Image (cartoon, rainbow, N blue to C red):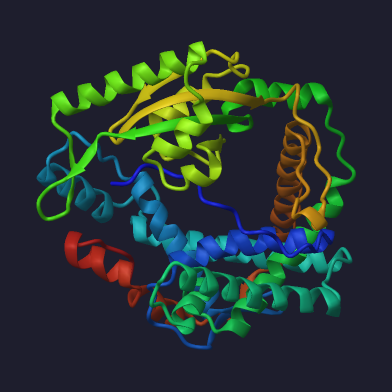
Length: 422
């Protein structure tokens, strides 16, 4: 196994329009959902009902259904210390026992999917009523962003030498939907996001509120930059397969790492030059072993990440540390820690390929406002659903058909005898 490496980020398009950011957020959320329903093979263009006069399509129900099915594992009371037989019996019990309302787990899945889909449709309708329907230009931006996403991933796969065709990549992005259907699907999420962005402008969040959130878990926000020399403790067998070194060989590597550390500390050996010449990590000759570690950008080494997040400030010039993991040994130095107190806003500089970056305080304040907006929109939709926005013109047979032909449902019925109300 090769040493972990930090991949280079793709540069953005340079378009910093506020709505583009909203669209990007919606696309990111929906992409995750659509990848989860990639394996749904049964699909048509029918709709299963209406909410507020708007059609609820098959692909939308399949999306929410699969998401709820994926959540089932979180409800199953199984543990790692169970035997296969114990685990199987526990799952069978869960899938074949009714709750206090007489509902099986699969009954709840179907009901939850319909409820959440109804909520989405209601939120989209209320957003339009509040004046946040997308303009023709904004709709064009949504469509262009979907096309751009497909092309981006197709290009990325080609660069990585993948044999994936354009249609296969398109299906990975759009799931069982056609490209046009996926664009329609994204539009309603973008409409809701547009409403939420407007609501956020009315919220007040103090620096003290943001600081409290940061202090509860600083590792969620701070960024730690390290520079490292990596010495692998992997070798190859006769067939070229990666295997662990012997205990003696690992001890020799550790001794070498410690020797390097002392020489870096006393200045008798140049740290950066040694990294470029001796490190076993990919790209070290180009990036000199520099990696920025954050909650969203891990190093690939759990031990190195743990060490990095323990740093409160940059190390002094002559301070180095040896960190070991299953792949090898790092001689590492912390060169910078960006935390709540020293994080600063960075303006976009397209000429130098620099994207806008919020400070940690700005990021937390925006998260708090987003949570408030999410809650306000959901509360308004939930209240509106008490007196309207019912699911009407329901095609019960179609819902039943989509449910029973879902691949996951078929599997757990076959494997565990899962039950549901017919």
